[in-house]
Image (cartoon, rainbow, N blue to C red; front, side, top):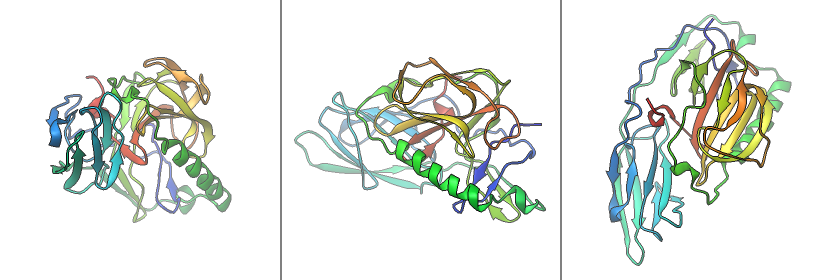
Length: 286
């Protein structure tokens, strides 16, 4: 049976059952990274699009604001920002160069097509957790949110992303299921299927900010790579590193498993900018 990574809606309603495989069509080519240039001469790798992480360079001392939210700029001018799955057609980037005035630029955000499946006739018990589970889910959501809110000064995010595991892609970012007429939360990660025990490596260097055993995600790790950029590794059978540890890019950090709400062993791999989930696949090598 194809491993199926689970999703929930805003009320915690949940489904995790064996469903038909997703359409694997990727709308954005990966890993082609284009060089964009914005106001005041800053440049970035990537194309402004729904679900995109853009990593760039500006003059040291530059100040940046995206859609009203400050963007941290490192001592060497390094910066990163993300555009969510459902971002509108335009984003406003305000840039103030050292000693200069703010310059605003409107970024055209390329739309993407997301795979949506409608499934009906499912038993309610398979899609809605009980009250005890909902309390646990709420507490775990708060822990995860706190880890992803970290705004640290490191610039490990500027390194190229590495594949965290080898295997078959069994789930893609942005897909969504409508169960019994109720839209579920979109799938905010990339799933890689393989045998239990398959080595999992850090996609970027960084610090472990969360290690735990969660209702949905099973055993998971979250790594902070600076400036709000995080990666998450879920459904693990074993965690090899603990909270506070610094890890190198491609360092083994866990083993693949089938913990949490799944139907088979796989890695659920997520990328985010603070609380905004992003698509890691366009950034991964071919």
